[in-house]
Image (cartoon, rainbow, N blue to C red):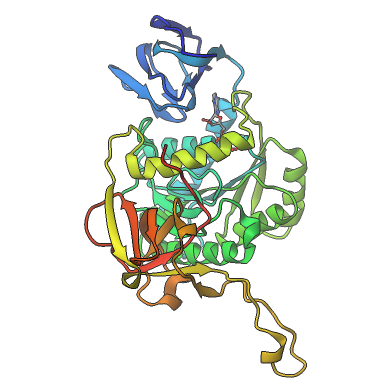
Length: 431
Ligand code: ADP
């Protein structure tokens, strides 16, 4: 296509309950402005005045409940309006959740038990590109607009929206999600899996979910407000075989009581049979929006790379990472799940060798680590690594075997907060 041809600013008059769908190019800035009426982007209202920059590569919808005129400035990849959206169904779902939050809060005020004072724990499931992350954002932003502080839990290690790929994480959402900055990063709780695909070591994925759930449970038990607000849990788009098993596992681990199934009848039916009949879990089928943009695996891979880059350089390219050098002896790098089982000869007679999939293995620093991401653990001892969350990430830029020195970039200057690092298969190549 070559260089984008300039487009003059243009206005769209949106009828009530319709939306303007826009795809932003990677390198052409685009901004949007509300001219009249009210409109929102995935649950967050556009300010009444001023231009809002839309992040590069994003695919958004500017939706209006009551009608609006909006203006676009800059070149887009595509833009069109549609009046066929599932937004009424989504907002009705929000209203039901809201009533449950109010009920939980009232119960807490009357000294109700843990069960009664627990707000909705919503888990959103569906195939890739069914609009899961988008629905999560809307539910969170609508709840936050009403003053709730729900917890966002992101179990999508492939295309997560809280931090870099390869992690499962949680963050309280205290105000509608910022259109430009996304999920707030002040206090996310992050556990590091280290790969974009759960099948590499599904047992570790399950253990990390348990750890995250345990930590959240602890936080909720001391905080009636966040308990009543509940959780919104985003999941991976893998819904068959092991993927399906992990969904069941997530529902159980986080004690979800509402399952929202997007865009797949079969998955809805399966989950309904598997969980609704046995417990008080509502399994609800929701329409997928036609606006959701399909992304192929190459695009996904690219997005993962950009997410890593963003961690160090900022979404708007406004951060400058710090380069640093450590001696090999100053850090210890571990891998979770070595997969090596004990040799038969080392076992008692008759015992079958079992691989411990969550075993911690020390790894030697090598040039293979160049371009990979290492997580900095909050653990004090190696055996606490799997149950500890993550302080942050570094990106290895060089390994000098002879001088035994590792060069990395980090978002902050100064010493690493811990010497215990976790290796990963996540790579990013600085262009
Ligand atoms: P999933 O989480 O199921 O993989 P996402 O919610 O991430 O799907 O949606 C895929 C892409 O489509 C995202 O880039 C998202 O911003 C975009 N998108 C979702 N809904 C709309 C819409 N109504 N109009 C335009 N783009 C949308």
